[in-house]
Length: 115
Length: 110
View 1 (cartoon, rainbow over the protein chains, first blue to last red):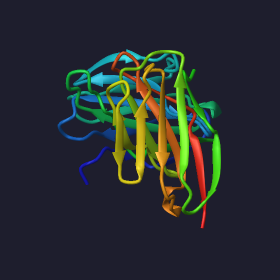
View 2: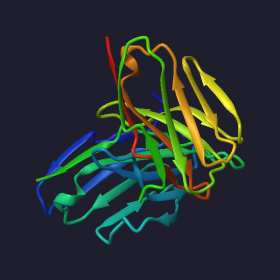
View 3: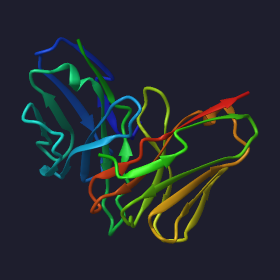
View 4: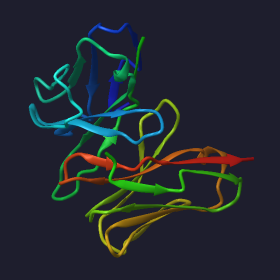
């Protein structure tokens, strides 16, 4: 399968624990995005990378959140000291920017439950 | 918060019926995208629109980019049970992050 891959698909953790999610984008895509989606809502932008550079962060990305894309390929999203409000689906998307066209393709997501 | 308003929020239809949903924005978008999301999965791209007035089809799906560039419509003809899911409109903000509507939840009764 050559689509966007996310791991794990589900994560259950206790409040206060740290969690890390991984995203492998479509191989030729230079841009990678993280979104958060809560029940009944559309995805909300968190951050994006162009190659290994993190170019934008949303105000939703608190200090407890950090994302990396060390070699411009896969990315990790870490949440420290998880809170119950962090429970959500975390989606990764990738794209290959071409002119003004920037179609994002999504992975299946990681569903986080904080108890 | 969300800048795109989708309606209706949910639809319950009989198999075989046609479906129409729309998305409006207070801002102009240069691209409109329609995604479908099944439970527990990520959004899957259905149709991309790049020009005002553009009408594009993908099988039984047809989408239009409104002339004002502030709205878009998605129509599904002859619905089938596998059309069930949540349909999201989306538009890029500054060609970077994508803004999504809250979705239209479609239920198709056999």
